[in-house]
Image 1 (cartoon, rainbow, N blue to C red):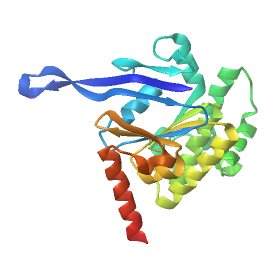
Image 2: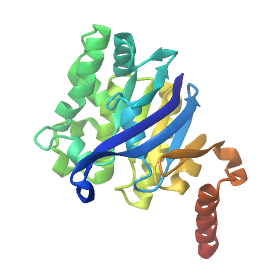
Image 3: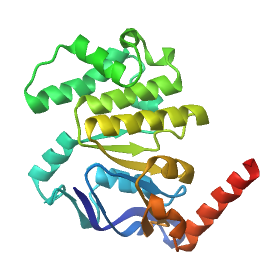
Length: 263
């Protein structure tokens, strides 16, 4: 369904030690993977590993220096058809729900962004109040949340609203960029359970960007370990203990030690 092939990205910077000469910093190097319909791929890496950059590439926001992103065999950067296909078939849920939701909008207005996207795509005119209530119910909130402002919601509730906005456009793929890292542990599990239910109900495919291995093992089908801008290991979560790269082994060891301390 989705394929990244030999993706490399570098950013330009000025080197003051060399009289402000322009240099380039390599952020991603030769990243390749395939994602099948209905799967959840975890992209796991520490801060500075390039995982946010790869999210921007996948979502069509950053054209790579080299390599291709294909959606059902169509390049999203080399053709208008590919860009339109990506826009109509992918949604994004961001880490910082407080900035991704306009604080001056009521919840119904936040949802309207996704509803309007579906109406443009389908040519269908929806009963917006009913659709807002349906979406809220789908993410475990009652219809009266539609009249609230973001500051009147808890972090978990507001992230549920952002998830409802993402599914409102009826995408096939959702890119989840650190969607639970700002939440407490109990709410993290609730949000992952909700996403799992929606995945089954709506037939969704997920890309889950995170720095937490435990959430990957709880939520994902496969994982790409990203280390210093390179994909060092891509393995099914069911076989994750067979990972061989030292970075993956180190992460696994730290999680096993933490689990041992709790017992």
